[in-house]
Length: 308
Image (cartoon, rainbow, N blue to C red; front, side, top):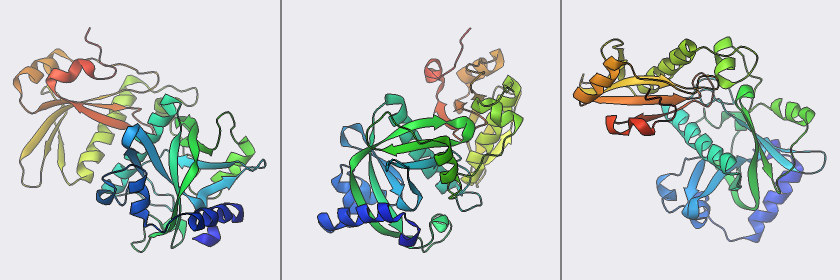
């Protein structure tokens, strides 16, 4: 809501809104090069023409540093809403897609374009209240960039304007207190898998975290994921009618556990089982875990695969 926005930020938004043509939230994104914007009205980040990345910035969570620079804390926890509670499967996927694009921007060292918007109701209800809708959305002509990516703290810092500046620790802590990125709750496995702390996760912990992640992923979409470890694959995935869809081997990687191998049984099964797939979970055990599925013919391209 407008009253939750820093007055200095709201003034700039009003200037942007009044200086351009009146466009709907979807039209703004479409004119920025997202041709399928109308098919993705509820996304929080898009890939536009020219591989340009566009991301939503919620004005309610924009912070203004002592020097006047804007910054924004991005939660790397895809499973929990800022207002509390767990996300549903669709919300989790939307958060993963957004983080994947932001991470792509960070890894490339390039910036991204932003649409700055306010919500019609309290910002903490943006994902839990069906009445949550965009109040104002404007295109920001100033470029944003990902200044830091910190899986161990479950946050990334997004900054408006030229690169080379980051907010102070005190400014970040004050921004955390606003609610969209709570202090992380550490566990030995999660801290180790994410690269934080002195306790590194063991391969067994990373594998357990990967399996847990995959089971949650499939069951979140209404599928059944049955444990089949020891048969050449780990999980048998079936739909509500009992039809088997996939037989997957799950492998996890994380800082300290960068690679994995297939057992002889798994390798042999990949050659005879038509539904066999390799599913690799990167950053297993952290809030930024992601996965990709590989056919038997694509195994060698899987990140972390050790054929030895």
